[in-house]
Image 1 (cartoon, one colour):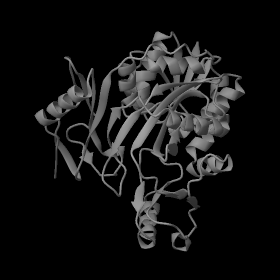
Image 2 (image 1 turned 60 degrees about the vertical axis):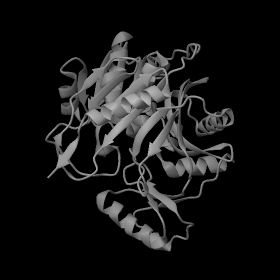
Image 3 (image 1 turned 135 degrees about the vertical axis):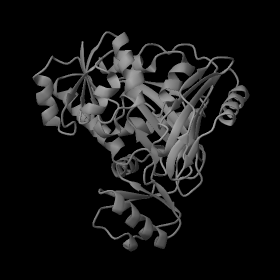
Image 4 (image 1 turned 120 degrees about the horizontal axis):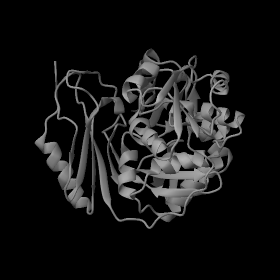
Length: 391
């Protein structure tokens, strides 16, 4: 069955997750991308790669119509969910509601839609490129972020009106597009990982996320935390249903206040930065195959008996500008705790701090039976290796 995967830059989720899963399912995959050279280098000729403008729905339809008839059109990119949904709809294939994809992508639409549904009213103001931030009347502290941003890039806590003006100027010097200024939702940050087949949703579990110190929001570690309070889970699922999320994977970030879930953002794809690879390990099933099957029109299989495992993802973050002079190689450690370390920067690479996951030097995944055991193994690995960034 011919499957088209829409992508921008290569990601671990696609390279090490979805493409191997597609191969196991016997799917014939073509990657459509606006960065074909990077994908060709990554896949070493094992997967067909075609260059095209993946933001152009009409061009995508033309490209696919001139090729083998599709059984599925899929994307794991934050940037391409609406396009994939529209292309799938054109070919009468299972796909997401393009309006839901747009609501998840556009943080201003997400806030207004949930407020209109009477589910949660988070104070949120859209700041268009020509708008003057000094004219806003806001309560502080608040959070400033790109309306359609990803990876915590240019997300910052703002303490007062003067700082807002400065921060908006800094962000506008780096990027175009609208910004949003939102109420600061304080509290422990959780995730809920779900997958749907269009008629029902299965909860896979969740993580507790630990962030860097303010004013930035860099994810430093995620700890497997599947036993979330049932009212909070129901609240998240109710809000996802209102947004129209129903097919494929969804990664939702939220805090719990007063027993209810208040959404930070909804990412209408599988969790990234190798947490998805850890998710497959801790659940003992291939979540990538599970997601692809929903895009092929298959119903979700019954949930397997849950396994009690402990797991953690730790990111090694650059603390300064410079050149990466020393770092350990990729390695796996087998024992009571299974460790998998993968470098994200090559020794000799220049590090320019972005206060986002672009600052990650490497990622360590750990799975074991007890959390204390997992934490000790992570601490031991980090203590035994050095990451050095110098001039």
